Length: 535
Image (tube, rainbow, N blue to C red):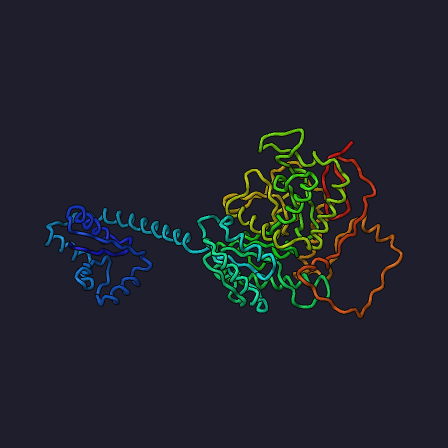
């Protein structure tokens, strides 16, 4: 049996002529077999040089044809170029080619297109085989321990995607990271190809497809809130430069945690500008906390409550908006099919609870972050990633921290939590929602701290002044004595847990009045909740 190999540049007309003849011979001769190889014009010369060096041949043009002698235990026998192949076909088989030059050129261009398409298909298949590189920063944080089992379950990235997890932290955490790596390997997950530990900054984020930022460590001693904010700037500058240098072109970056989430997201966008469109902040933790509080009040499950919107600073001054919130499968006198829902505010008749207890519980949650445990942090991050890759539930509102472009009257250039939906691998801000206007006072309260944090971090503002409403200032004027301070007090160290305790918070106060204006109870605290009037 005659076994020939025909190789050439994908756009070579002479390769096209030899290919047509070879196809004819293979179709009509039972003992003739041809194997075809095409190479892109950019790599053809180097490929041919390596082939000739390996087989000790001398050939410089396209195509090259040789006969395989593997069945005889020998190496291939060089036949030559297309002329030698035509002579061989004429001499041994009595067949020649009458292909015109125009047809040769046309087929050559078709071959090049087919070659490029085939190479793209190969790359796509490699993408399915090659694991998704997932990097987790501050991997010694408790949230990482809860996050890994979710990421390796196949639910986040899909049942056909394998992942490699890279645990990144400082050198002091290496022992803990090694222990975590072994536990992750013990899962024996079919979706987990490998787990590795990285403690060298210059090696971080290499070919990263996904980067998850958890709460970073504060190892140095700080003396003020401003120092805390500026320390985030230097760290984000380092991370941003590493992302620009090492990450994959399509990397997706998600910022979670309980400290300065909006600020860190904004700084990463600044220092990794080429990837700014793919950096988001997780707000589902606060949203989940609000749903759980409402579910306890309504005696239902949190998963039945949808469309709670978190506006503003995820880990600071924010606004929990219940105007679009709905509850499904609620047991009451009015009952309907699974898709039937009722407005949450129409079912809560205790306005005192909404205005006081509900507001205070969420305010305490975002003010200290102490109730933001590892399970909630991990679930919020994983759910956001799942939506990013596969889309959010149709018709459902999701809260997400993204860069403002002036939507809803929000100042441009700050990262702000707002209502979105995920679809087609990205998110869309829901600017078409009706009846969700935010008053100027609430907007000022939410944006003031965010703008100041950014200015302090960039060194454009020396002192951070927490926002104070007229009510707050009036209360300050009533104070007749001030506590003395000890100038020789010892400096203190900030830990991950109580980092936000440094942020001055407005003290809880009872509203002096509740004006029944369009059903809105305005409070001087961090949150304003829209509730129905109860006559």
